[in-house]
Amino acid sequence: MENPPPENAKNTEAIRKLVIETIKTVYDPEIPVDIYELGLIYSIDISPDGKVDIKMTLTSPACPVAEILPVEVDRKTRSIDGVTDVNVELVWDPPWSPERMSEAARLELNM
Image (cartoon, rainbow, N blue to C red; front, side):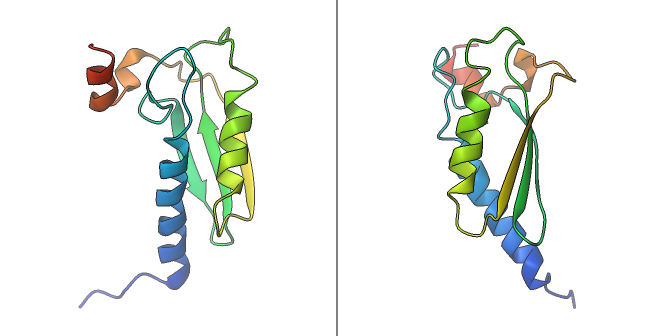
């Protein structure tokens, strides 16, 4: 018989689902697909005390929304119940490419 996950593991998984749902409300204004489906979110780590670390990228370093999208991800993630702190790190390695997009994003963009 398998032991149930500890309560904090359940909480971090619940917060993770909410973070993903929330990030899916953030759109690159130039592309009609949310940044999660575009593959711009590289990782989401949640500590048992509710601290959320997000590594994300942009479609290019010259992206005109480079200063807007990470701030929006931070602001929206902070609004989630159970989140105690947020750190959004903008990374460029590995570089983003269209292969990182979900199947839904590819369909939306007719690719």
